[in-house]
Length: 484
Image (cartoon, rainbow, N blue to C red):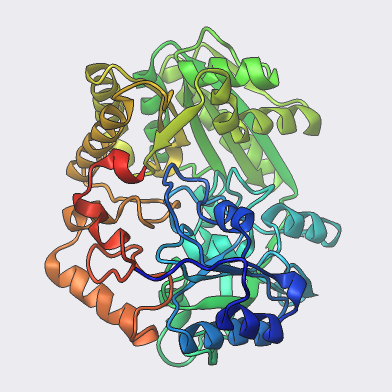
């Protein structure tokens, strides 16, 4: 076992200080504890030294110093990840990109902006608003998550139903590779020559390198939009309405669904005007030209009533629309009023299987005597069942993780996939063999090793084999409570 760094400056720390500055290299106990986890339930990470570069050259220096001292490298943005992708193992050098937070250029003619990885998602959209544009991917954590983290996890969000997830909005990226060299993946032309290495890199969760400059696609602000809240007496009716809207030829900008438990929690927390006696609500938004928005609104209303919608409310102004969305985007925070902890997977299933999979999720939670709250991107079948619990309760973690594993199995059996936006990280890698064959995993590993032959960039993540972190390589067989 490698000896932990002490308060005495080690050669590794000394070289990093020389490459950066003494106030941007931190190896005290508090910093190492703070950066030992992300927003997932995974604990027990082990940080070596934390670095805060401000340029591509400094990121390169961090990687080269780490390599000279036999350390792995873990990139970290805002730490909002929910799958343990930024949890460090075996005392790596943690490269935090939050100080690289500049919007470098905005080209509205070509609809491209170059940004650094530490730019906050919502800050980018706010900066683009005067120009008449926005950045379309809008995770619920957009007030705090970074563009670099969105790229790493190929993040989604409510409005990705119509506009596509992050990969559709990343045009090119300058990246630092495992040997400290710099590469440009993708370019600004309509049809770049050669292999789409940009597409391979987006969603690689820091296992192929660190993005230091990112060219993002700008989306024009729509001339008109309509935000609707539909409520139902049963979850089945709400789920059937989702399929009915798409079947009617309407692809809204967003269709979000919340069940009774989370709706009550959100309403008590935010006061958005959600009906607390509903079994389920749909938050539906359409945008575009005014005429088409009105046509689609009428279709959604017709489909909603055909599926027994009790009431249909249309936001009267921007303030009401913002309040409805505030309720949806603070849903995860609202559950703290119920119990202090939650655990979730973000499997994606076919829309046509929503009813049967949701019924299975409720059955699984009931059988394990757990409270489940469902709030999710219903339009693209991206589930977010939150198993809400108190970690101080004896034996609760075993039940929570058994229920989570069963939810994954049900989703995959329905033709689904493991993750829609949160990534695989540490949390889901033990399930990878349930979705992929041995050949599939082997070829994914070969692609990874083409970028990182020595497996030093965020090792132990995503793939179930080939981990190099001391404890993490055994996680797949350890009891959940040991590491969670």
